[in-house]
Amino acid sequence: MQVMDLGYFDEMRRLRRQLLDQYWPLVEPAITRLLRQQRTPLTQVQIQAVSALISERFHLGKVDGAYLEMLIKRLENRVLGYQSQKTSDAVRYITIADCEGVTAVQFCRIIRQLFSRFGYQGKCEGEHWLELSHPQLAQKLLVYAEVQNRIIHLQDLHVLQSFQKEKNAPRAIFVTVGSFGPEVLESLGKDGVELWDGNQLGALLDRVRLSPRSMLD
Image (cartoon, rainbow, N blue to C red; front, top):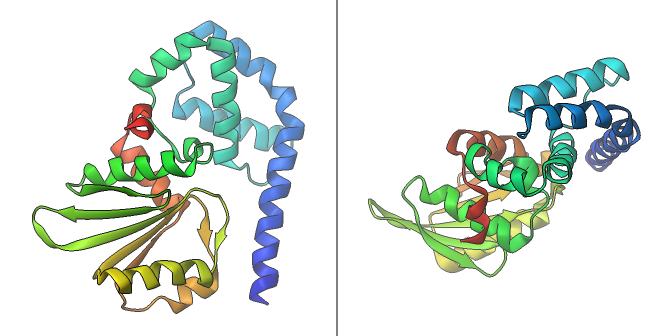
């Protein structure tokens, strides 16, 4: 039954994005006019207004917010061009929608910069791993960063747990832009492993507000 439920949620996400692709050309002209008029990227309030408009006009129960932000950002780059990139460095910050469009290496850098805001130091080991330390905490922190928007299963978590044991790290975090399957949440015990899904990561990014340059550092 769990496998069927996971498949259902994957299918619903795919259908929501498919419907958004279908209706996007009908609202794109209005957003284009707004961008040309204000000559700056949309604010978060404006993006929420666009989401509400699409949901109401086309009778959609729920709009995939991350996918909508990606579509809007593409339109901003096309309409505003270089001006949008210069302005966005000053007034925009990395969102969870941005993370879905970056490479694994860039995502690892973003997560490293995020932890640096909380005093952690370290570097990316390959494309997915970070080994971090804190000057005031005498313990190592392992982080596995998964950039693909998918459901994380037990076999994915076992990779982190094995590496945590190998490194003798008391604390480890699995960070993903996606979500965790119910079997992962049910199996989580007191082994020092924390789970950060896309909602938690998105909330942190909104609060910390990393510059787009973070993915280059």
